[in-house]
Image (cartoon, helix red, strand yellow):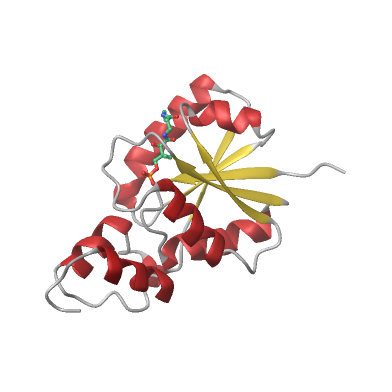
Length: 164
Ligand code: PNS
């Protein structure tokens, strides 16, 4: 029987409920889903790769067919290494599409056999991003319901704020 393995790559700095919603959807479609954190990101992350692995591992404890990994270099090389057939990315709004299409087509040029599959998170997460979550939290706003509670707890330790 053919099984389909997919890679869901990203920064996950930190994981949000939008990511988790997408992972839940992906886990129903694919036999195995690997959530893959990019190690050598040009973005300046708040959480170390190890902290992000820990948070994702905790969040994904209930999923039997989802695992967490990290990768360096080209995504297509990691996908090959993993013997996966697909890459999953989330599209929250049409504004995401342009960048995602560009990446998907570049990846297709590099690895013609690899398919990128776009999934939409629940509409209630359409405005949620790791960047905004960090910004709102840092400025003292509530991010309740947008990330798991243990992410809020870690942010409280990490980020000095006026409002928390
Ligand atoms: O969550 P992000 O930060 O939007 O994820 C971006 C990510 C990690 C998917 C993308 O930057 C990536 O795949 N980087 C690995 C390097 C690579 O393959 N670059 C060419 C992509 S077309």
